[in-house]
Length: 231
Image 1 (cartoon, rainbow, N blue to C red):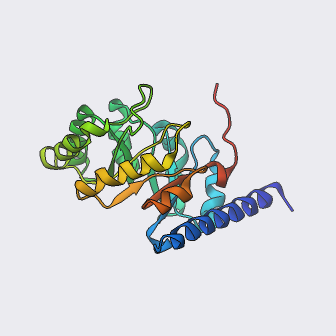
Image 2: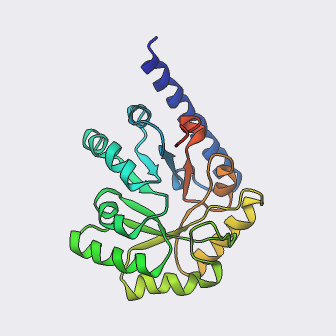
């Protein structure tokens, strides 16, 4: 067995295990597992790992950095035209045009300046990636996202003032707090704003996210293993 074959088999097995976990959590609360999209987070992993997941039949992926995705994904998307790419890391305004051109979903809309520039790029490129508003449910100073108290006004401004295709909300709970409290808060904000999609839950807590209504879960380590350290 070659190293490439071993890698492919490992990633295929990991994907199956995570899908089983999603299905079990969904069934626990009477949900259809098919209503939950598994985003395989390939950030900081080489293209061969993403390709192994594609060969295994997976088609939905997440990346943190626009530049990394630009280097990795154009040939993969050409080879696998049904693939869907989510931006799940902070978006700098000077990368907005590149993000609109490459990503199918942008999950990190969190400030008015970015909303304004996104609206301009969407009109310019005539390409409308779906958008999620990121909510900083833990109100952490070091973390991106609109504060919960500001979320309703910001969501309304994005949809009605800028005409943006906002479809849902995303959050990353504080590492030292129960994720369930943050997922429930996110679900409440979404419900009162008429949004039906919730991106919440990662490798350590995706089952909790599913039980509390997640429609997207972002899983990296449980599929691809530990990420390479950056300098």
